[in-house]
Length: 398
Ligand SMILES: *Cc1c(COP(=O)(O)O)cnc(C)c1O
Image (cartoon, rainbow, N blue to C red):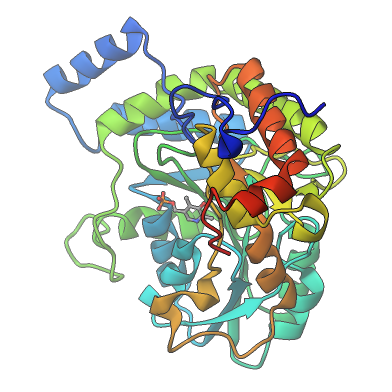
């Protein structure tokens, strides 16, 4: 079927107006506006009842004892590492969002990068064990693109080394581990993000989940400058509070969340079923029994088979009106801010995977027919790969 030409060869674009990469899932009902009005009229716009209700509903939903809401996942991880009072190295993946590395360095700790599994793109327990040295103070795993990492195996490595396992669970609110428990329940603590592109959003925000009551108490002080109430600070904290209006949005979003997550997972399944048949296109492997939030719908592009590189596909998709992003490229250890830190370890899978990944549009309100049209565009572009290369109609970035 080589009838319709791709836009790169003068065909009409798959989308007349640009299909965005992501859109936030937010309730637009009058109930929410009414709740906002009540908060504003009450005069309690921080540290009020909305935050308390949100934390308690989250703790029921996630089936975890303590949920400490904060201003972002980044501030949550910064405070968590601070509360653990660590010295030395933190072993973490480099194939992740930059904030995972930044929180380590904000605490004066040294990031040591472990490689990923080339199929799940999550931290490899074997390479993590190899990366742990004498000065290792903690292991920080990440649920890449909302797909649960091998937390049990990583916890075993951490146990053997006598260090805590903490998890940057930013994109994974609502995901499930292979054993059926919800993400948020493993390691010493997990930290979610509620920023606009994540599965659950409160505008901005973060959630630290833990079964450790002492740690939860310390975190509650730490998010308020380290002030336990008597103005005799016990820890170098900061202002990382979640405002009441955010908590209100979070509470209302949480009520709709199971429905929204279901939509997103169906759209992701549709994408994956369509894409799997295209030569040279691959998808992230989801561990058997686990479920992902698919915060990012990530594909891999193998130039030898597809005919075009990841960068060429991205340019051809842009002409079709489809936004995409090479995510995560560069990986953290190759970023400018890490020039002095870099990585002393070889990370062959991280380097190889970051060269071929591409994120496609996915959001709750996306029409299933739009998913099909994106997949058709990927297929059509691949079919015409040689002609597109020969025509020099797109830039060839990498
Ligand atoms: C989004 C994200 C963050 C940052 O979350 P904020 O709430 O914006 O601070 C950190 N780590 C990962 C893996 C993320 O995807």
